[in-house]
Image: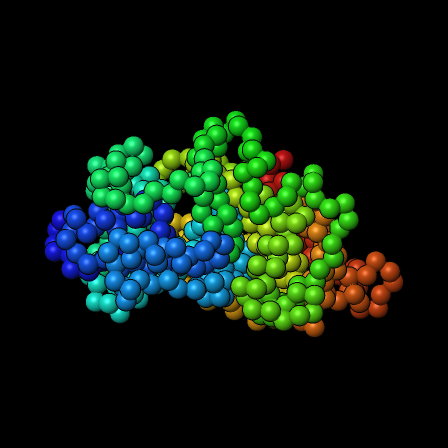
Length: 403
């Protein structure tokens, strides 16, 4: 230990790993532990985390359980979707985008309670350790980050169970334990480990929690409309809804129709490849709808510039640089393009597919007078002669020089 730690704020789920970390911090650092549990829509009852923290000696005033669902969707998910963000062509960044919010709240609680450190349960192999700690340092360069997985000698499941038994840490034994390592929030649920560690293995059907198989989805398509204002969805089927409610409802609808499943081998920030499966039904619908309304409202070069920036923006989020000056600069440019992205998109949901069914906007740049294939009075087709000759001039000159 490089310095004495008086208080530490622990990102606490109430599960076995973070409960062991809680006790380990008390013993190893001889410090007061404050627990923070974030409700970002993982769909689990969080009050048991309070009871377990109390059982492990945490004072009631040092237990924070915060409902962050609206902030998560409004201030993190929606800004990311304004950029149509996808990592490595497929991944909608459901885990990555949740980490900066958790870091932000850890640092805020540390300030409120006078803690001089934060701690998390991310392993030394994963991306999350990077995201949590870079986010924390960006917000408070003086904070200390304690990563037990990089310090302790509990390097196997058996050693952790022995530690739990020695220190009377409750171990959940009821029900069938999932063979997968899972992470869930209002945007997605991810699965890693188990048979997924072999990229040749097909995921088991009973692994999926949020969606039916597209083969088992209803035989009838479902029509929906999503309304956008300044690039953000604000309502479904004519009803204005809050950000978190919109995403939850699209998750329900998408899951019902087998939308949003992904099986991906991704390149981790720490250097290895990782196979994971993801369910992102609402995000998959939103991405399709947002691109559709942008196709009406964005100037050609605006749209192309956004597409050029998107992979860079996605990498920044994946690598944990949400609070970086370059991400903020890109966000400002992206948000500038969204001022006129207003309107409604119709969609059909059918057996894993999101099918466009019309779009309209008062800010539409689509002009039928110019675009029609019928007779028009505004476009002189002879004008294309000069355009083509000027653009072909360098090829003509180059071709003549080779004769």
